[in-house]
Image (tube, rainbow, N blue to C red; front, side, top):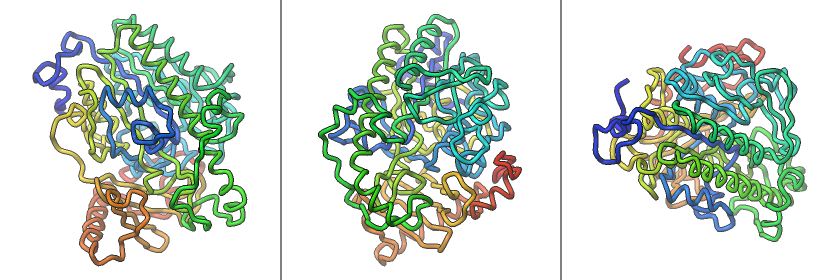
Length: 497
């Protein structure tokens, strides 16, 4: 592919931004921080008065905030597969959680390593296990060091695991199947490792790329799973049920639909769950502040691109749903912040419909690195720089089935543009259309309103066209098991082979 707009800026061929150190011979460093299950709506800079996120709020004021960033398949493993390949879920084959990633993709880590970057990966991986459920033993959680096959190009520092969310009983693996236990609260210790990595690599003549994958604010939401000092900040904060709460769980939800448990367990506990959720977010924000301080003290801030995002959101009872795996705003909408002093304008907001497959090409475009031809997302680096240019008219949304089981009946597809969300269920063909600008809580389904007949038809046609481009044939969940895996949860192929 040719040089992106951002690459041209960085190489000194345009004068809209300062000449970076890339022009002087060294490429920028990259720090990518990924939270798990953090929704956009629960952050201070996004307008939540309950949130305690001063460092993320500062990051938003110091760089660019993508206000319409979405997780195209709002589940952990599908998001990560798209993040590292720049492809849609239909092409990665990671249609549900707990599948083993096919290594035959040109991935983010490959590009970084091949272009001289010293890489680091700390935290949750979730692309390796091929057993249903959250198994934590080495067989499912240790990712072998053949970086081309299993670590998708990351050949440097490695302190990771497939899955764990007990943050005071945390562990990780390096290059041997020997569990290393964490002494303390996991995000704090992971941040310590990240700071050590930054201090070491800041002295190198080579650029570095560090991915820090936090577990919080993913459940369990128990007081034992968050620091007492953080919980105390929210102990007396009221968290009412959402306005779209329903005493009847959504029948299209793949789990948690027992009507008795919904009322007797979830309804009374959701306020406390949110209390712990916000406490976890406050801790993440504190650790992000520590990262920023390390970057400043090592003197590399002006040559370091820092990105913060999340893999998906959380419903907390909205629309009769808990957790994720749906097209509603609380599930798909995620924070996406980028800071690079002197390159990315401070306090800039972009309303582009940025989706997960767009992340890899956008970052590579900003860094002046080659974007693999097979990438399906768009390089939106010009928008991060505050410039005008081409952008997608909507983000494709793909719900491929159950969260982690081969169970049919929960598949959906959708599109979200800057105003509307359109979605359709495979089970019965039922459709939904929401005007997110005039109805941000998505309380009114407009699909049967004649006033929106033409809009609905436009979305149907756009969705059909996009799915045809990707060879997404909207199959039932078990079809993917039979056609795209070996039957043992190892991915063999996707929609394009």
